[in-house]
Every structure is written in C-alpha cells, then in structure tokens.
Image (cartoon, rainbow, N blue to C red):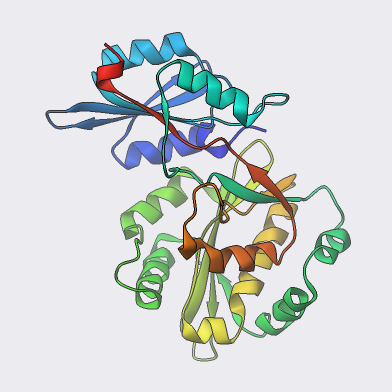
Amino acid sequence: MIDIRQSQNYAKYLKTQGWIVERIDNTNYFVKKMPLLGSVLKIQRPKNINWKTIKKLQKKYRVFQTIIEPCLSFGVSTVSYHNLFISDGYKLSKSSYLPSKTSHINLDQSLGKITAGFKKDTRRAIRVGEKTIIKDSSSPEKIKLFRAAWKKSVRFTRFIPSTTSLINLRKSFPNTHSLFLTSHNDFGEIIGGSVFTRSSHGTAYYWYGFTNKEGRASLSQYSLLYQGILWAKKQKCRVFDFEGIYDERFPNKSWLGFTRFKKSFGGRDVLYPGAYYKNRFSLL
C-alpha cells in the first residue's frame, strides 16, 4: 500500500507550505531550507529507500538533518528496519513526526460487516449524532468558517492550521480527493468538523476532526466520522486509515482520548517503525 505522503497531491500541498519537493523514481523527497544552518531532508513512508539518491540530495541542499519515516514492507520486520538504520548512523527519534501507530478498516467488506465491527455504543451514538445537520464545507468560503469554528472549539495552545493552509490542502486534493464536513445545531452554528483525504491508491484518511462542547454533547463527532467512512466507500477506497492512535512505544497521553473514540469503530492496528534521523556531522 502506497502512503498518501508519496502521492503527487501531497507533494503539491507541501510545496504550498514552503517545502522543496524532489520527486525521483516515484518517491517524494521533501527539503526545507533553514537560514544559516542549511536544509532538512524528510522522506516519509517511501516504498523503497534509495541511499544513493539520499546522499546526492544531502550534498545538493547542504542537509544538516535527514529524517526518514519508513513504511513497513511485506516480510520486513521493525527490528530489521531498526538494525538497518542504526548500522548507517541513524538514531531512533523519541517521538515520531507521523503517527507511528494507526488503525485500518477494511472497506472491501460490506457496509453491514463494517458497522458490525463498531462497538454497540458507537452505533447508538451515530444514530443520535445523525439528528444534527451535516453539510459539505469544502468551498474556500466555507473552509474559512470551518477554521474559525475550530479555533473557538479548542484551547489556544492547540495547533490549528491556518485558513490558507486548509484552502491549499483542498486545492491540492481537489474534487473527490478530499472532503470537509461540518455539523450544525438548529441555529445553523457549526458545532463540529472533519477533514478526509484519499490517495489514488485506494486509501482514505481521517485527516482532522474537532467538536465544541455542544457538538460533543450531541455526539455529532460519531456521525461526522461515519459519514467520512461512507464517503470513502463511495469513492471505492479499500482502506480507511484513522491517521494515528496512541502508541505505547512513543507515549503521548493526550492521544488517549481520541484513541478510544477511533478504536470504538473497530479496525486493526498497524505499527510503523518510527522516525529515524541523522545529523550533519554524521554525513561528513
């Protein structure tokens, strides 16, 4: 399965975020220039790791740090990956940049089998949440309102992408490659929202999600996520990726709450090796 970070849509999006993208042999290499220091080279979930290409890019862009987040290949264990990177001078980061653990739903199943994998309380919550009004908010004007409602719904310390970044995400994943949904109360006010993306290789992703106090009380987050699953199945995706759950190897307790929420929809756990990095002094 090819990860969405290796798609041309994602490459287009990162370019809007100030990254240089080198696409070589169907692999995306992301470069971020840093004043005085040089550059950071980031390779996320590549199908193959080409050490020769990496070294060329390190020299070309004066890379002071290289970050590789490998994608598990069939028949290759996380231990094998670990030994491979350590032998080349890389270190395992204490925290991953991409989610190191996630959950997948098999969308090749019938909808009945998919919902049978939900917890009983989750099926009930979806029915309750369907009483809220859910709208497609994928236009630039509605994305502005989406972002404003998101900002009001969370603590000021929580990172929220800028309006420009969200609009660029939509432009990079146009038409049926992304979906912005909002839930509304009877007064038309936004009480929750979700963003879903999909690759051309059959995987849909639960990219972002939020609810305010009223949205949580109405359980609209369950209906929003369920609508995202239905959308992914309609687009003939084969896998629904929850895009991150709590990983005991890299514990972040703030992830426990939404992990319980995501796990209530069933699915199977998927583990990635983590993030490996190498600093400039090791490249000389």
